[in-house]
Length: 185
Image (tube, rainbow, N blue to C red; front, side, top):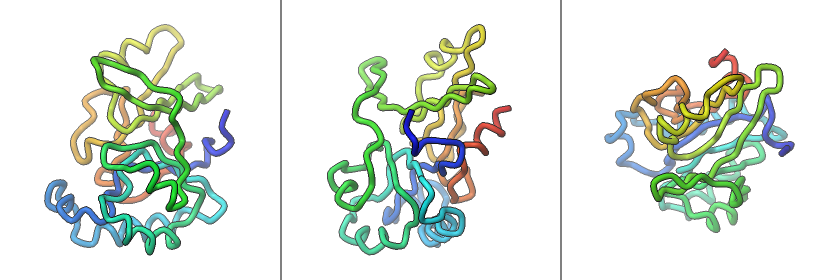
């Protein structure tokens, strides 16, 4: 088990900092980047772990060097479709996964998992949502698997077993892993 992924870990997805068009595409408030940074630092302390499910910055990695010192916590990430792993690592992010992935219909889904032993709930963290039939086929008997993901922004997850962590549907703030489990229970 990874020490950094625990009940107190903060989770969020798809902040897309410096992606000006995301404001229009996802009907975000004009000050969304400032709001994300403000909420991040209001909640996350320097000693905390935060796990970003992809698409942290959008292209402007030079400006990101100015923002990084402002963001609290030990930062782990899954690669999103807009992320450059080496650039994020140079900024101080830790790549959470380059070992585990599902390949479904030719698409690769890197993932991390967390199991709540009290409830037998398994959270499968991905950037892109897993296909509904795939995640629902994993739920039988005592198995309770939920896909915690990003990528779809303000679109619905379309399954009880998928949990969208994109900032647009999460009040532009990170959420503790235990808050996500409470939502499921």
